[in-house]
Amino acid sequence: MNALPDSSIASLVDVQSQADPRQVAIQQVGVRGVRHPVRVAADAGAAQETVARWTLTVALPAEKKATHMSRFMELLAAHRHEAMKPARLCAMAESMLDLLQAGAGDITVDFPYFIDKAAPMTGARSLMDYQVGWEAHARQGRRTDFSLRVVVPVTSLCPCSKAISRYGAHNQRSQVTVRLDYAAAPALDLDRLIGDIEACGSSQLWGLLKRADEKFVTEQAYENPKFVEDLVRDVAIGLRRLSGVTAFEVAVENFESIHNHSAYAVVRGGPQA
Image (tube, rainbow, N blue to C red):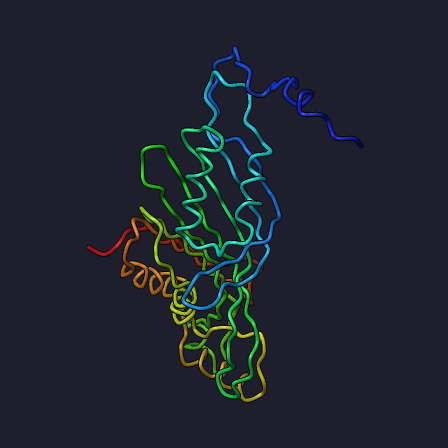
């Protein structure tokens, strides 16, 4: 297909920049579900290559008909090779406001994050994956807010089952979902945060375990029973100590091994006074 000459491009009608007579403001409009590579630098180590799902939106004034959808993709392409940190994502959201001439905008990026872990007894190495989400909320004339969400799987063993049984106790995999809100982009050590959350379970998980490791994990969980209430409270206590956090939420779901339903608990709060 032949390219249009510059004079033809200049004469094309820009419909989306026209006025809209309905006078209804739109709080968020943009692109969602965009799969795009990203280099995540979430701790002191090297940046990690992964594939993320992106949502980029801006606020649209009542008098404006539409936003420029292509500019969101241009923004992603421009940041393709940068190591993405919380501060970089916030700066990207701020530049999005200028690019689309918007008063407010939000960027959400969700990605699998991998940690290289050594098994507890044999030291066998394997990768564990965790689902992570970052959000940047930019407003003209204000500091950009940042939020983090991370999903951490652990093992929990039932204290009641252990207490009433002659031998054994039922245990299950639990999912700990943590959300942290910051007034500004934090200096984030994601590996340490995940490790602190894992330490609150009856046992943490590994991708690869040999027999000696499996024995250790089974016995460790048995000696460290946790109700869903214990687990959510222990995680919440640790989150209260984090610097820069304005609000947090921790939700724990135990996928029960002896019921066809889950046990569930949520704690919301802010930093410890």
